[in-house]
Structure formats: C-alpha cells, structure tokens
Length: 184
Image (cartoon, rainbow, N blue to C red; front, side):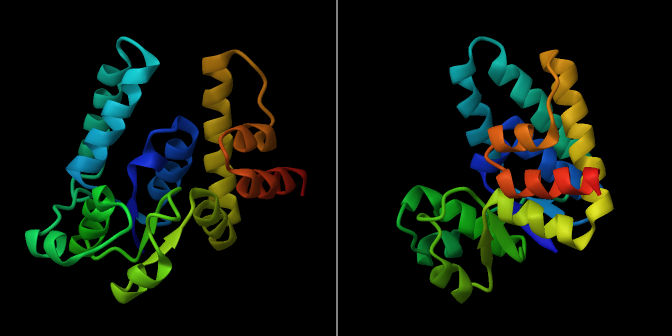
C-alpha cells in the first residue's frame, strides 16, 4: 500500500516517527513531494534558530532511506484538479503521480472524500491510519510505539506512558490500543 504523507503529519515529531516507524516495519510505502518536504522544513522556523537546519538534515535522511518516495506532481494534474484550498492541489497531484492508495493528513476539510474517491484515493487522519496499521500487525506497531516512547523519554528526561505520549501528539486511539497491547 502506497501512502502519501502530507506536510502536516511530517512536522510533528511523534506523528512523523510513528508513521515512519510503520513504514520501516514494512507496513506501507511512504510517498511525499519535494514541496511537502519543503513545507515541513519551513514550518520548523517558528521553533527558533537551528530548527530548520535540523529538519533539513532529517529530510536528507528520509530521502536517503526512501529514495523512491518522492513524487513529482504532473502539470496536467495540477491544472485539472480542484480542492477547497488551492495550495493543497500539489498534495493530491503528487498522490496521483505516485499511484498512492491514500493520503494521510490532518486537514480533512481540505481533502473532501468525494474528490479523492474520483481519483481512486482515500483520506485518513494520522490516528486512523496508525490504528489501521496496528490492527494489521499489532506486534510491529507495538514495537514502533515503544521505540518512539523510548526516544521521547531520552530526549525529554521524563517518563512517558505510551497512552499519555500519544494523546499529547493528538493520537489518542493508537495510544489506547498500544496501552492495551502492553497490558495484554
């Protein structure tokens, strides 16, 4: 399954690490465009000096790890497509050029299901998508969650129960599933 990841799901660190952990585990093939990666890098500027450089380093690592993930939107698709926010047309066009099965985004209103269905695409939020990966392979996603939790604890110096960490990252359903998995 090929999944286009919108910039809004790559920029928050926990979301990105959960998604890329699922991709690394072989549960899906990630896709993005150069513009999506650029939006992520620029969004980090508000975090202060050095944040954009750090993001660009992470982007270089993504490109090295998934060299075939970058999709170039085709001009014909860019011209014929319509979305409520014209700045998101490049996301849909990239998904089409990469033969994606779905778009993972937090921007539901900007990607109406009917328009995506006409292009053979689905749209899921990050939490919905991660939960679907968990249902596909609970053990792999539990390992991904544990790895992300461990790194968060190392970086923050705080204890992070998995459900609390996922809730803070706006991923409550996968957090609940991962907590139940660890207790089960």
